[in-house]
Length: 111
Length: 115
Image 1: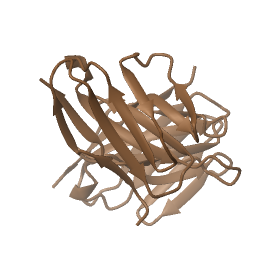
Image 2: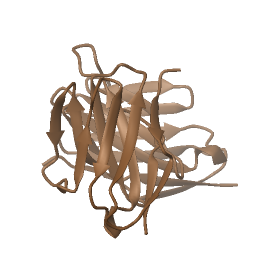
Image 3: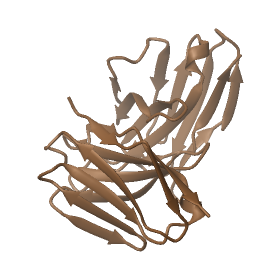
């Protein structure tokens, strides 16, 4: 079945870049997403990428997609303490009828 | 601003006492979802509505029901809450059409406590 995997924890120093990685198994994914969740809050959509693209940049965020290896990454440049949160990778396929989340990566930003 | 609203943000109920959580949206999306999220876990899909069509996940307990009286509103009913149902409940919406990228927009969640 469909599966999305992420490493569970990442710590970086303030001002450094963070790279959060994700792998997925379903090759029919049409879109892949990154969500951010702060404590006690809902999920905030950060960005998404269509499966026929290999890169998308949006201000401090860069998404890289390697479709051959089914690997997605989110790079956050100049990481700030406000970036501390859980980041979920997700994929959709079957015209949105299937939407699968990864387990989330807890990003800790150290001063 | 277009948004997804959940009320209440915090709900306390007693073991076995029915409770209803509500969600409304101003995005005019045709799909609404209910997720359950326990601490430090990914959201778990309970069910979704595509317009009026109700779709239950296979492992969603019968204790959980949902209603969508119109496009804007969706309710989650927990008929007999148990201690294991204490969680954050997230509502989300999406647009399924040919031009869509199927992203889901989430409300802030309702934290349910069962005493």
